[in-house]
Length: 446
Image (cartoon, rainbow, N blue to C red):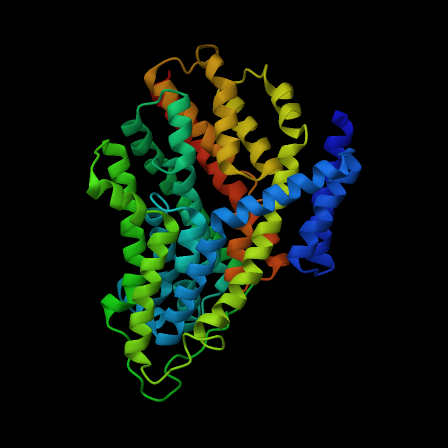
């Protein structure tokens, strides 16, 4: 597999993906399969290798987040049918006001994504975003993008999220300082995304399909605790697990918390609470738990989402199995341009491979031997280098990333709209982050 063929295959694959989803309106699952085959054929990849990488990538992705999506989708359906999502939406509106509902979601995403993976968090927050969009008549594009990019910001910059935590470790950056400066950089990154979300929401306006829970029958809504608990309890369990893992404590209680704080178990706890809330509001529904009830309907929806996300993981798996990573590494190993070195490396890997964590970690690994040469030799220089890796890793967030398809499918968003909004706003976030890192370098490194 020669370098020109691999690069040409990647370019053609991206073109096929865009044409299939934006122009032809082909279902994303089949569009991703066509994209993967295009890359493999043009790059000269052995087809048996391609099939193995495809199966491994899809299987690994489904194993990692398939259960999370299923549990989160069922929880969201129960919240929607019981009126829990409506109750949460009304509670949020009391705090933010209708005019700033999307800002409330962006801020929520900013905090939630620190302990919780983006995929899990978005699946949990999606029913609230849809309900708020329906109630306020604010475009679901605005709600989805604001939520997604709020999650995206801290996911990239703030340990103990795995990506920035790994980069801080590779670069020997002080963890406390990494958390502090990562959180600070995430603020303007989130704000820029919020205003961009408002703009694209007006351009690509749509309202999601949300069933009216009480149907005009006067059915009461759940109380505030039962509405929020299915979301807050899983988040609290995952956050507590993260905190305990950082303390180094041991014992039975810690072992139990490590189990309860894993995303599937934590989400299952939320689902059980949501099921109890649904039964309290709809005690007459005896079919809810059977093959034709609320749970089954939600699982049918979740199945399609899992397939799409799995196909995205398969495409990423095939890219990783190719020499693409080595080609990029060799091309930029001698780069010496200050903060642009980690930024450019991270940006190329995120755009080509799709994994933000891989982009950040690869960038950090490549520049670590060059920290002194690049001017990052001081303790604060290590922090600046880490932030530059993360800033580059934000660009470009598109169809080879599982999270892209989680956002698109759970938000009822047309794929063409997703492609016209999410990648562009991720570039704005990335450039905003780069500017912040540059200003920090002027203050602390000169």
